[in-house]
Amino acid sequence: MTDLLQRTGDIFGEKCIIDVGPRSASIRASENALRLAMDVSFIDNLAAENQIVFSAIFYQIVAEVPARRLKEVGEELARAKEEIARLKK
Image (cartoon, rainbow, N blue to C red):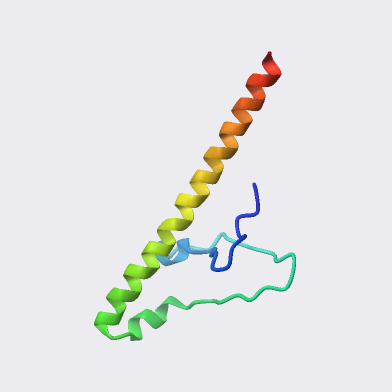
């Protein structure tokens, strides 16, 4: 799989916000990197209106991650399919 974290603001481990199960994500930086860890329990300490705003923004960001990854996988599969077709000729 290609390097998925290539842009400032990319995230990983986002599934733990939605699915409280054990985490399965891991990452290794190839160079110095600034990272931010978030403990979701802080959401409970926000005022109700801020919880709604935070959740809306966060879920929009989290939705973009699998959509981008799915697009990348689809593009990779299309390239592989083209290569297989080319080799069969």
